[in-house]
Length: 205
Ligand code: GTP
Ligand code: MG
Image (cartoon, rainbow, N blue to C red; front, top):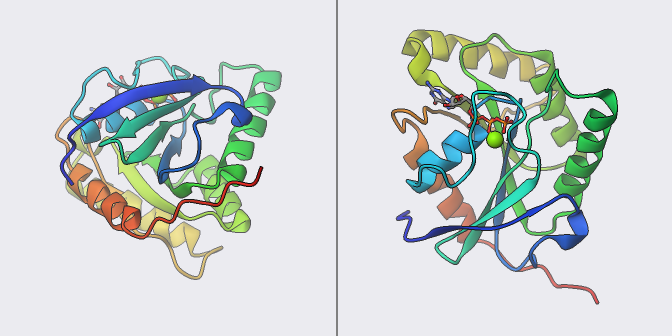
């Protein structure tokens, strides 16, 4: 898919104030600092569109971007941010879980996982929760430029194997780098395919 335009639309903390669900939507989620915002910028060829930071906890709102006037990409705050208070974390959980379970036009959730690490409990638990909710997701392993391809492949295989304890089938995965743009074309192909079968939800008044 060619990216002809990519624009920031709005930031929200309230699920009730999101843009009308008239176009297909995709959300990027994962641990704080895993590289969600960087990967969004790499996909869209627009440095600085989604705000990135070396300090975890940079993205704190539901941020909507509109691509090609045709679909939404959403940058979410990261989970597992150690420096935040229990109260903040509980609020994060509530509003992100509300967003993920109630957003009618959400087609697929991209779960980002750091390819440098062995499977982490917090990521596995989050995938299990998505599975329990019946929410469609795909796996995206990030920061692959930081180590050898062999190491990334090993960690990916371990993560997939761990998920098989809960899932009969493990979703498709992508190995990516925002630095080299590895895997970004494949993610856009997956989105393009899903866009092709989107039917706008009937809005109840
Ligand atoms: P929060 O919004 O805080 O949850 O973080 P995030 O997941 O959006 O991460 P962000 O994109 O802000 O990136 C965090 C740090 O990792 C930044 O310093 C990025 O430059 C770096 N980073 C992200 N992706 C990559 C990558 O593919 N390769 C390398 N080498 N660094 C990356
Ligand atoms: Mg971010």
